[in-house]
Each structure stands twice: as structure tokens, then as C-alpha cells.
Amino acid sequence: MGTIAERGLDGLTMAGLGRQVGMSSGHLLYYFRTKDELLLQALEWSEGRLGAERSALLSRPGTARERLDGYVDVYVPDGPRDPHWTLWLEVWNRSQNADDDARARQAAIEGAWHRDLVALLAEGVSRGEFRPVDPDRFATRMRALLDGFSVHVAVGIPGTGRAQVLGHVREFIEDELLPEGPARP
Image (cartoon, rainbow, N blue to C red):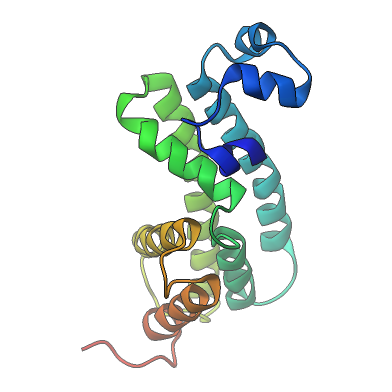
């Protein structure tokens, strides 16, 4: 994961990676078949770790808003070339030519994030912590906002550092989701 984040998939050779991990390129190809498969399995591994962190965060006591803030904190990259987000950028870049299996695996990863957010939003709505929004629709919009901002953080676009992004997302939540937020026009 670190090597992909450092060099990108185009800068990675199986021989070079093999040297770093003490394996031959043939051995790597035996397990992964292609660089695209290596990339997708690295993302699945990374998402497994992040999914466990997200599950622990979402199951802890507290308000839905507190857990939503935690969800956002886990979602947004730490900064430019964040290893996890670099994997996502590489996967998205290769998605146009991906086969059905790879697309299904990518959709499963994204689906887990979406389902967790929908459940959290539905809980907040049912408790009266959030406005009566359609949780699925709101989650779709919010994830698009998070994805867009996160790409900017991950590639290092000036003026869109992590702190600025978290501020924008907080404002979006306050304006669009919290009962005491300003009324929509």
C-alpha cells in the first residue's frame, strides 16, 4: 500500500515490489495475476481495516451527530498522498476497463460505507437529532460531497486541506441535517 501511494501503480513494477517484500515477481504474479488485481486486493485489505475502525466507531455510545463526525473523520484523507486514498484514486482511474468481478468488488466496498451512513442517518432522524430526511438520498449526496473533497485533499489541491474540508462538511451537516440549522430557501 505504501509503495503504491509513493509511486502510483504506473511507477510500480512487480519486480521492484518483489524486491521490497522479499519475493520474486513470479511469486507475486502467482498470487495476484496482474497489477490491477494486486491493487484491488490492497484496497480490500485497507478497507477491511478501515471498516473495522468504522464499525467500532459507529457502535460506540453517543449521539448520532457525534458518530457522524467520527464517520467523516475516518472518511476524509489525512493529507496529500494518503495511502488509503491513493489506492482509491488508482482503482477509480482503472475502473473504466475493469471486468465485472472487479466492479462488483469495488461496489461492495462502496456499499458498506453507504449502508453504514444510511443506518446512522436513519437512527439520527428517528431520535429527532436530524431533520426528517430520506437517509438513502442524503447519504448519496453526502458521500458525493465527501468523495469530491477527499480527492482534493488526497491530491493536494491548495486551499482544500483536511481542516478546510472538515469545516465545509461540518457546515453542510449543520445547514442541511441538523434541526436548528437555517431553513432552506
